[in-house]
Image (cartoon, rainbow, N blue to C red):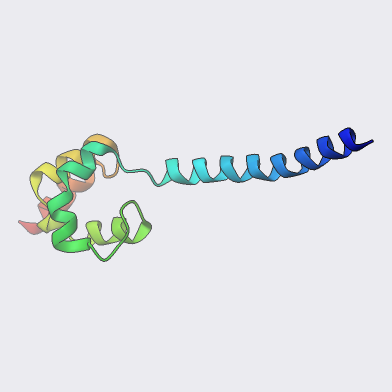
Length: 97
């Protein structure tokens, strides 16, 4: 009778662990920032938003607020990754003129 009990205990431990792992992977992927964006925006991040964790909602909000000051390299990488649309960039540039 020890074997079924061990099996049941193992199963009861593995199910919550699997659920946690799936949730952690989903959250990580949802907040992921591409390597290209990290490289292209590193100096902008350190100049304007280093108080926020990389990939966090706070850094996204900070980078949007810093938008007009961001380097062209960073803006291009953000557009290419889908973080911001080209039309949004154009609208912001038009407002600055």
